[in-house]
Amino acid sequence: METLVFRFENGTRKLDSAAQLVGVVSSGNLEVLVNQTDLQSACEIEVNTAAIGFAAIWEAVMKDFHARWQLADVRIAINDMGATPAVVSLRLDQAIESSLEASLEAKK
Image (tube, rainbow, N blue to C red; front, side, top):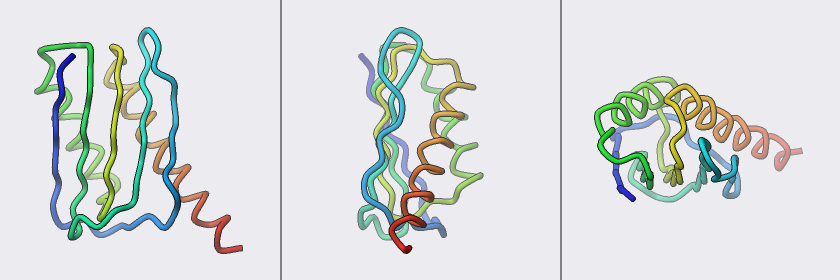
């Protein structure tokens, strides 16, 4: 297993929801856990992956994700068993969309 950690400073979008878990770790898939926490407007992403040697690809996918969402005070944990970059991006977007939906439901 390889662990990669990415940190993006000066995010602008906060999530107002409880922790969200999407996906299932199995062959070719991954799970994403999103937690709101005080990171002084940063977003931290920790990737635990069985696919060793792909740090540059992970970095590109995480930079693209951060550019789309600009998250602040969010910690994300990813457990991966060999998902493709497209699946990673889709699962990350799904996790954030679930968090936003949960926030809206809580405000009702």
